[in-house]
Image (cartoon, rainbow over all chains, first blue to last red; front, side):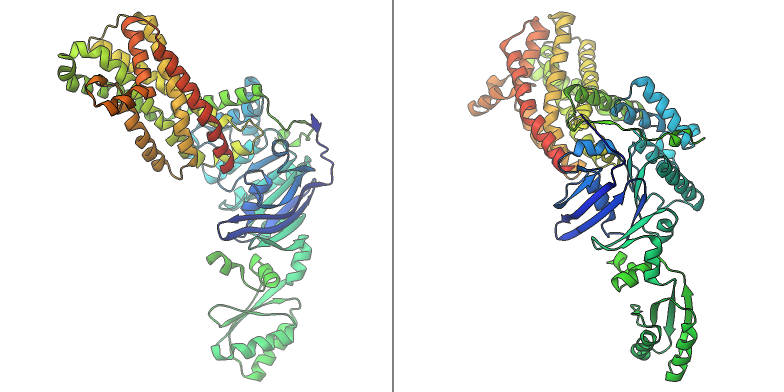
Length: 324
Length: 271
């Protein structure tokens, strides 16, 4: 018998995790360190390796190389101990479709060693907490996406694990349900849990996470607090569309010279996107464009999005990755 | 309102191995889940309710006159044969359903819980014995309605029924193995039928083996299904326990000894 010291500094300490599916290196040497009692966001586009990373940390998938420790316990050597310390809420609800919410929670509780009576009490408590009491007896087939996610999270909390993995907890939820989910996550951390969540949205990381890792093509390409990440992107970004595609090279050079950062050209070759630290520089740029005889078709300034984080960090857009 | 989330996490006792008792408890819970699923979707019992009725009627009236002279004297031969054939083929469904189940998200949760690794498999197989029991009872009832009144009496019939259910459970490990390694549910069905047909038809289930060519008789005589059929006939028709029952049980034990470990290992590798 061992006991867990939930005050140990690192809830997750992974180094060099690798997972290959055939030719595709889905996770290609990921290092992650998550401090106990914090919310950690793993940010990246579809197919970046977020889910695979979580599945390895949650002992659902064996790593091809590298190692990870959960509260000091090795995922490969002590998987059964790790499972007692974690709760996993998958991207696709990991609950039993053909059973009711109550039946699901009772079965998971029983599997975790609760007595019949304890399991029933626990199920009621959780349904109450997550506002599912009225739907408790209905089969899950008739549940909305948000209800399913809530039940899924409830099922992860039966044993009150100190570390909870949430794989894209709000993808596909309406804004109201999403805010509820955020509140629940914040409450979890306040009560001492550690949360590792993946997301495609910078805003979500912004709202919740203490620290963020940006992941792309199976690698961590940036790590830090949300503020640090944003500073690296510039507070906003500037999009300039050029009327004449032939001038795009000259325009890019000009933009890079005046704003003093690297710019990217869109696939169709007419639009330049560049991080913008100083809004004053825009007027300089416009004057310079006029002077060089380059006509702009459209000009806009946008707040940083995941796209821009990617642009700055990897030198290419995130959307392109999604398509490939 | 947030009473549940406000409670703080307590330090806990951790174990890296699950005990035999835990494995048993977990398996029973998983079996309970299987029963709940049957209760929620009773239409999945169609095969075990209709097949005994249709097959018993069909085979008895088709083969009865040709093989035994008349239907009534064929019943003691065919009812044990049909029983074994029906119940064993029902065990294919175990593999198919296991494959379907494993593709669902809920299996991720089972894998991430600190439960005995074998429980989801063992539980599914355990729950399916209810299906075998239904098929067994219905076959005997159909036989009775058609005029089958075996000499062995009710207690022998019950023992015979239990024997068939136990053997079907053992055989279901084979199909569970296919279920774990196959990629789709329909391929499980395909491979399983390939195994099942020779096994049930190249036996003494429907016709006495003595009219077959020698090489076929050789196979029929070593076929475990033949021994099980003979064991059931001995029990129901004369109330005797013969060497065939021992062979059937040993055969069942051997199947479990081979297929349970490799199935669990294949299952773990997919984890």
